[in-house]
Image (cartoon, rainbow, N blue to C red; front, side, top):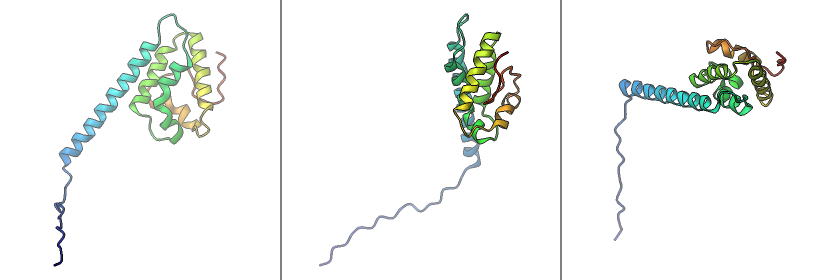
Length: 142
């Protein structure tokens, strides 16, 4: 007597994408990006205490969200532009600007695939007037 094996049928209903769900997901993603960017800015601001010298760790943290833009091109993310704005706020005096410049230069030289044109355009793309040039070869003696 042959035994029979039960066959399970999968649900064959097709799922259709709902434009409202897609829009909701986009809004949720944007909300997540904005919250992340605000968190990065808050962390950077807490790292800089009045009277303390600016460190490369602070500069690196503020520009870390910019790495994809600086190496791949396109447009900088909201988190990147918040970091650029934070960097401007951290480097208020000549000593801090010089330190930030040297840190940015060192960071730029760690990335062989850094797009120099993207680096130079970064402050402008973020709508920030930055006294520090993002470049591998900038002269930081201000």
